[in-house]
Amino acid sequence: MRFRLDRRAQSTLEYALLIGVIVAGLIAMQMYLKRGYQGKLRESTDQIGDQYSPDYTTSKTTITKESTTQETVQDKVTRTEFTEPEKTTQTSEEKVDKLDKESF
Image 1: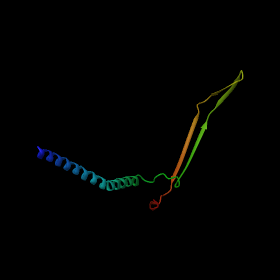
Image 2 (image 1 turned 90 degrees about the vertical axis):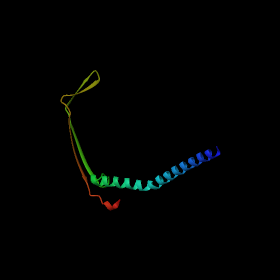
Image 3 (image 1 turned 120 degrees about the vertical axis):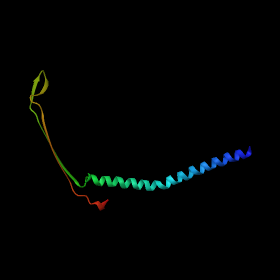
């Protein structure tokens, strides 16, 4: 019976060591996996094109609203009505200067 208990303890110890080795391997690989993921992410963003940067982007937006209203005052109450539908026009222009890739 003692032989059987020793055998079970040895088996448990072997499993504990095996799990420890696997965990140590995963921890050691973590840095390389992280570098690989960051490299792929950087490559994907480079393929997209120029990125937004407040220092390198110039934008101009013009919004024009045009409406016709009629105001009436009755019993000290002012009432405003649109006599024609409101027209809104928006124009935008954006320019991105070339980023220096080596500045990152």
